[in-house]
Length: 511
Image (cartoon, rainbow, N blue to C red; front, side, top):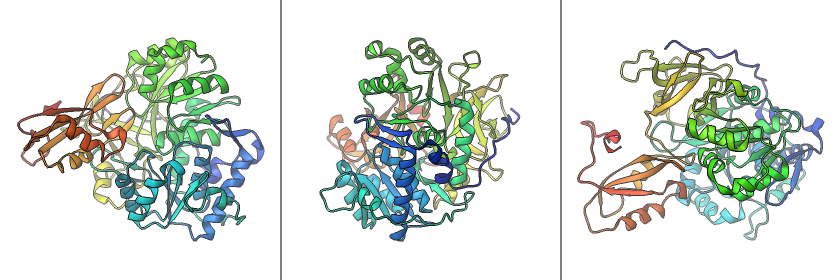
């Protein structure tokens, strides 16, 4: 298939991400920017900007500046935006960590990213302290009350230090360093510049056509690039209030949509499934919803139609990766242009092509390659992984197999990459295999994803056992060492793990 050109890229402002995102704060004044769903606590746009600048001043006074990395280890709260943009305003870089991480997982990210400070909340403080100590980090700041003696966000905001001058180069300085397994392997730092992230907000703004009166719901985690770009930064840039949820609860989710008249809901397929089938939906007033956008994992055509018919609003799908800031494709929201099951059209400024993975030739069905201003600068300290993902011509190889129709609508039909998507979360098989093989009774192992209607995929382990052990003991052993979404859900014993001559696990045989 020849290269599919999208409409030209929008003009990308040559500023830092914090300045770009909060550009309308003075004009918007006391209008709500962020609303804490469980309590109703509200932060207005002007107050958000004041707190961002106050935090930037406090960070600068502590020597945090250009080239430094600050870790954010907390759930969705209004303060997430304060910390994230305060770090940017101090000319530093955010590395956003999954709040479900274990000490071991968090320590890896802190060490690999070179973080020098960590923001967290009281419920996660024990894990944060241990991981920070192991990574050699002395500065842990608690958002909210702290009984352990650590400084709090309120302490820093109260210092009154002036923010430093903006010094970043938007094209080269990193705004965010989220962690992704990419197409394979262990989590790697994804280097996203200010320009990458601003470009993607500009590319997606037109797709959703946000207008005055719209309200977003921040149910998807802000540590994940999906929630970070298309909810937090997109909403703030466009002056649209965001209702935050620290964790997903269906009844609360439905209640907040009704209470705050949410108009645009970004979801993942498990939430879409609940909207299509759960009886609780019948008792909720969801008439304010005008768009439901699903991402992070494939959404089938039948489920998309079922959601739209039940809710009475278009349910469309987008596509992207952490490595693309994240959006590369999205389905149009106009009813007459929706094609259920597709990921839609490439966003402006994004080139797409399909390449036969066997021959390297352009094809009508093949691996999806993309190129555009939202493509990452590379993986942190991992040149080989970067070269494996982005070729010399700037094409990012997604690892997903797609096809395209005569109208330029793409559909994801298979996956080259090994990554498992459990409820939208990335579960690297290599990481689970590394844990499994340490069990004394496991001689060899492999992990794959198996299809599941609710979760998308379930992590399933195959083990060759060398001693007496129950399935439950093996699964519990893994569960104790990984965060909840990475747990093995299924286990099967086999005689030998199928492998190629080079030792690579033949996962397709297991599937």
